[in-house]
Image 1 (tube, rainbow, N blue to C red):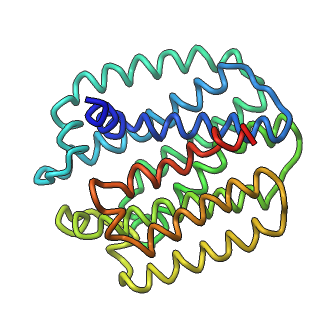
Image 2: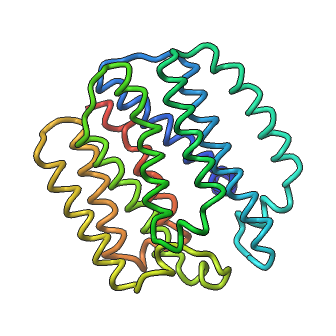
Length: 262
């Protein structure tokens, strides 16, 4: 029962939404800022809308796909569209209760997110889809702590971009056969498998090197994340069992809960 509930939450991208909100809170605490609850709801809502819109579109085009996520979104398209409309309405109201600087920053990110939704296939051809998502996602998470604290840590931004890009590239690496079968373009379908492995390991090494230059809680979190991703590429057979790579890979973005106790 618990496993099925968790799987449904994964299909609906709720685990990603929770991870984004947890990451935002973690970085806000580390940067010494305390935004209102509306900011957290807005981030979670926007992340869910983007992922849901992406999955609904894919479900519409990947007619022959047997992936559970696509089948679910195709079967429940109408109720999901209704819920998305309600969420959009709520978010439209909440924007009046956040600082203007955050609103303007969020508006810019919304434009970039819309560009991704309409240009995803073109981005895939140039091996930039995963990098684009990583940049927008990282900017969305760090925008609030950066703007409110007026502290701009580009090393932290780079580390989060690397962590997110590696996450997306690893998932593509694990799901290459499914992507090819569904004619779904990803970094794994455009690059040789061994070449992608080397790129991921190189980026993990780069991330660890940057994180090890600082000894603080933020760096410790990134080190833990990069180590987990290294294990995922070194022991793929174990992580493939029951799609462990999905749960553990996205679980990296839930790790800040543990680090807040340190």
